[in-house]
Length: 129
Image 1 (tube, rainbow, N blue to C red):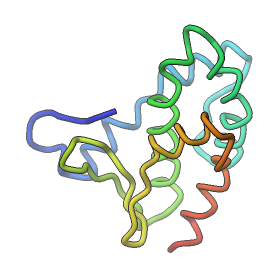
Image 2 (image 1 turned 90 degrees about the horizontal axis):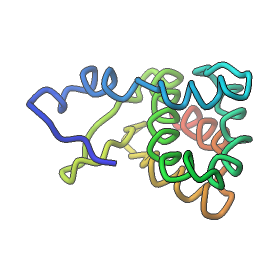
Image 3 (image 1 turned 180 degrees about the vertical axis):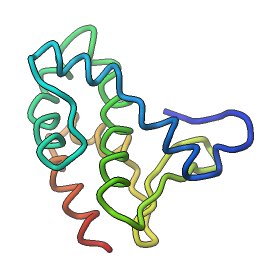
Image 4 (image 1 turned 180 degrees about the horizontal axis):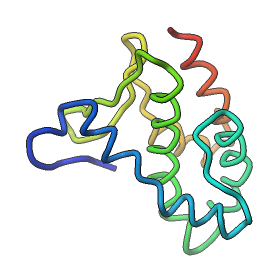
């Protein structure tokens, strides 16, 4: 995933507004009778569904680019100092206590290896404050 566009994406608030849209993820959850929540329990619920989504022919190719921004938004919401930024290559990352969380890469690794669990990523970010 990359974010390119007119000036303004370098402003964390503008980037947050762009990346805070999770309609596709919300619809996947709704199809399973669940609601999208922006808290630790919601992240745990999404994590529990990742393997099934990964193996779904329709959802699988999109899951990393949908869940990564969601995870990043929850981190930004949970950690007062956290904010979105964009690398020169257009990749959005979350900055927390001087470190970058590449949430797209984290979710890709979770899909490939089963680790790290997404709630653990959120917990680690909240501990960095």
